[in-house]
Image (cartoon, rainbow, N blue to C red; front, side, top):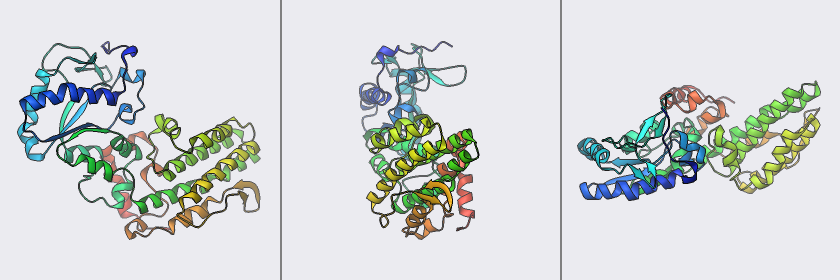
Length: 374
């Protein structure tokens, strides 16, 4: 099928388009046909548009006017079928020049497709709060969340909720949910932060060791892994969820520290010897230690690098940071988590795990069955 979506010169940000779709098309129909219906509406969940990173290229699939209409449990049973049918038969075919109907590419992805046929295959999805969040996150944020609930949720999933936009909150629940999910509880944050320092500790001496034996490729690989872990550490220290890898660098550029740290990290990649690479990593370590000390969560830590035992490799002694942060955790439920295992993003990088909520319960079982180890 040939995609039928507007040309790039008619692009607008997807969140803005969805908001217009709600205000100019969906809302008037609801007010006229279901004037007493109590509902909430917004656009949150998967998609580059929710993160605000969509561009003209994004228009070729899984992009377009979308809105989630949240109903209460009783009203969902009563109205969802009639409401979906009513919208399909009465929504306009376009909004601001963008088709409201969707078709499919051969690979199954959706694409905007002009159509006069009724009902339209629209993306005004009718859900309940419980069903949506249990499907998308496998937890119901209206209920109390424990530390395991938090650490098994990929950051990219949490970010795609809190980056979304609420258009209307007649149920008076969505705003509080987004507030609750805005970032980790303090002791969970400390647990993840200590684990991130631990990740750096486990490999910070290997970049130089690879270089010392003439393994320049291995040295570059370890150096790149350390750059990634430093960047991830910065997200944690600025209390910002990190997105999946496609938008990792883009989101990093929006952090407060990015202006200082990005040129340093780029020089790590440009280095042609492990000694030069070590020098640039040293500069990066000293920046992030300054960030750590500014947090005030431990006593001030040494900002200068030193040798790895008696070997000629300069490291920041990241284990000391991991231990110092871990010692500040007070919540017994957090302390019962496997020490330095961290959140799912810190020990899994498989897309087929992180993007598949059906697999999250298996991760939960792992945490529940594992005991604290030192």
